[in-house]
Image (tube, rainbow, N blue to C red; front, side, top):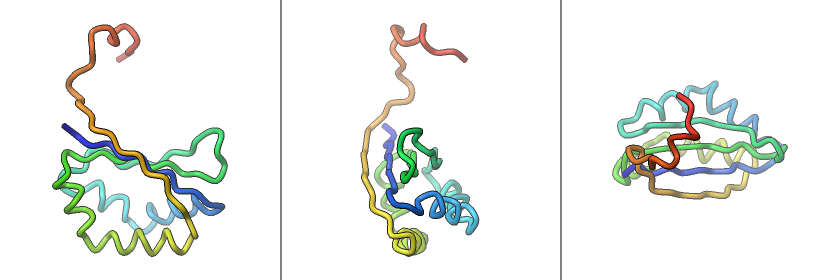
Length: 108
């Protein structure tokens, strides 16, 4: 079962943080890590000072490996540089089980 994590980075410079993560190649390096399935930033429509990260990993071991990497120091440093706070949510997902009752609402 995969693990989905959302992180809302909050602060006046949240979008600059996300842009620097991309510009420095950190996002590409995270996406290349074994076990990472999704790593994408989004801008919530109704929250001007928030950037939302949607991050999906195959399992806890992959997350632990990511957290132990030197990359985490870079991420923390950037988060501090832009004075961001965080709200974190975590979910377990099973990508293979979409109920038949939901299929009518999905357009391929």
